[in-house]
Length: 121
Length: 110
Image (cartoon, rainbow over all chains, first blue to last red; front, side):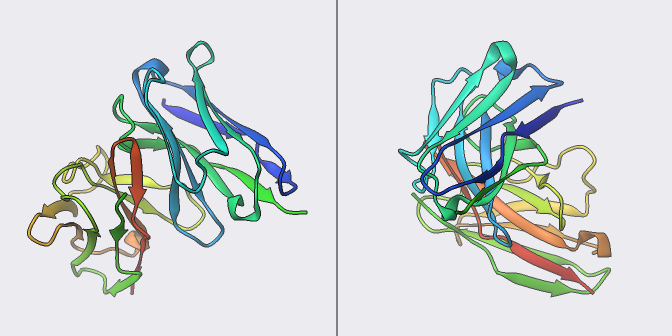
């Protein structure tokens, strides 16, 4: 059974950093692109970042470019999101998602349950 | 970058058919695949259509997708509406390592 499980969310002060993790299982992690998608309270889905199967292609939303860094570790079948200089606008439920293919195309077929990030003083 | 525009909300009766549109602002809708996701309250999204018109296993054939180059838009059609179809629906596409979601359509079935 394919599973992606997020962790690392929590309450953080503005300007601080946080690192999200996503543990993948039930599929060959190295064969697929992965994504982070967030959803602010009461709002729609917003793609945050994606990474290709081998890490060779990476994309970021303009809203997080220069502040967030996506990475993956094939040995641990894990996806990460390093979030720096957080602001209240980053408050959201962050989903880890598996792509159907190898490229950063957003053909998402599996979603995690999300981890909540709250940025507040 | 481009945007995907969806109606904010739609409402229809059980048993009827509804079509949700998704219009791409720049670039051809046919250039990159369109996906559709369903999100029920309190739950993670699930895929109902991928690659313009493909249904994942387990999704009923009441759900269908299409694209129209003349209007530069994609559509999700749900026929034989059921109350369980009440949810938010998001279209999504991409280009050059950039993924874009539409703003979502809140579908009410009553």
